[in-house]
Image (tube, rainbow, N blue to C red):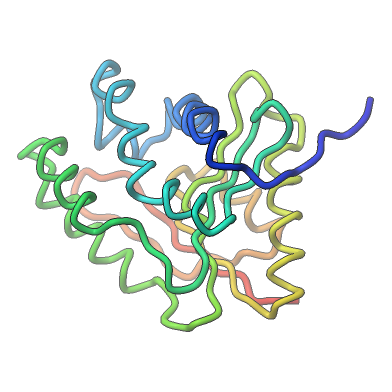
Length: 196
């Protein structure tokens, strides 16, 4: 069987990219802590990921997918971030008052770990459709971008919101640099990879 190819996603692929991410993160501990009701998650997740990273990533040619978009990786290049005002508005409108303060503390902690260099790429989302998981697609996406990072001498940074994924990232050179655990929020694990 021929290996699927990693390709750059285009603007017209946005709906497929967001749908793949939505499917993949349906049982993610952190995302479902934010949006515990299933319908809320289905209604709101795509909007969050679009304003948090997908829109800017696509603008900067930093979103990758495997054919048929069975897997996708949404990266933000150095100095590129989602629309802060839109993100703030989304949080205010969609995070429950009981979790809002904790969530904001978690975001503050995440900012402390984010590398302050001008050579760091941020992996905002790595997602594989559950129907295609355990086929090595996540590894293919990681290898593809890690090669680009190595060629440019760039760091890679991510926050793992699911402990089950940490070993995948470690196999691709990412090291745990901390742990964020506040209140009843699931653990978020910042990880960093230096170029090789």
